[in-house]
Length: 126
Image (cartoon, rainbow, N blue to C red):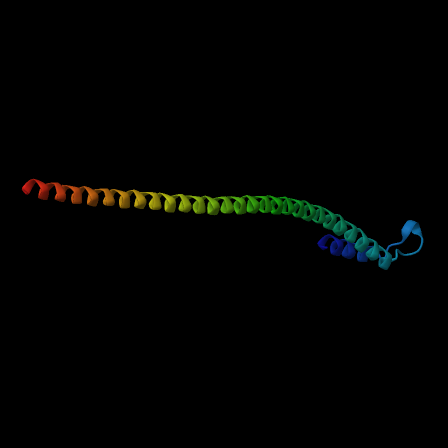
């Protein structure tokens, strides 16, 4: 835009001159032409920026897809972990029941042996 203003100033100086010895240059037309050139330049820059934004949008879309994929993987791992803990808890409970059953069986045998031992001891003492 600064360049357009400089050209406008230069054009104002030329306003009093004559084109090819004919009529004075029309400063309004010259100013409008400069503005048009500057707008075209700005449009070109805007097109470049639009292209860059489009590229960034594509990259963000790619990142979003990767995040969605990772989120799916995390959800799958979470479900598998929860299932694993449930299975492990079930096995642990089964092991406790089994160990408890063995303990009760062991206690019954000990009591039985103690009763038999007590009967044998009484029988010897008679």
